[in-house]
Length: 137
Image 1: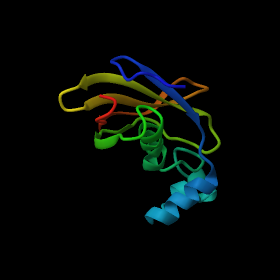
Image 2 (image 1 turned 90 degrees about the vertical axis):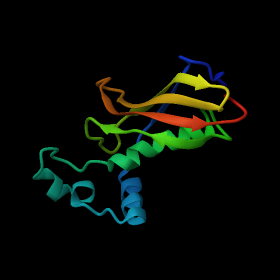
Image 3 (image 1 turned 180 degrees about the vertical axis):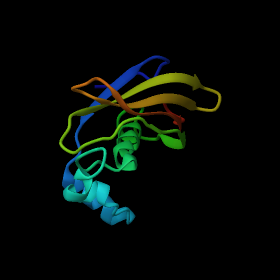
Image 4 (image 1 turned 45 degrees about the vertical axis):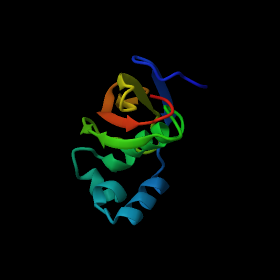
C-alpha cells in the first residue's frame, strides 16, 4: 500500500516480538538485565513476567520509516521516545505513524510514532521522528 506523505496522513504496522528476538537483542547490545531474560526473576518484579527492552520495541519505528512510510531514502535526524507501559513477548501491537508537519524547503518531516497494544488500545511507547527524504518531502 502506497500512502502519499502529506500532513495528517497515517500508516499502521502490526507486529509482535518473540522471546528469541529479545534474546538476540540482548546478545547484540549486551543488555542482559534479567527483567528481559529470566522468567523466575521477572516473577519477583512488578511486571510478573519478562518485559521487552524498550529500545527493541522502538526499533519498529526505524524499520517502517526506512522501508515503508515514508520509505527508502529516509534518514533519521531525531527521535524522541517515552516508554509509558511495558511490552511483552507474543503480544499483538501496532505501530502508528502520523505526519505532523512537512518542511519542503529542507525535505524534513515530523512524524508521530506510537506503539499501541491491539487488545487494550493503550499507547505503550510514543515519540516524534524527524526525517529527511529528498524525494518525498
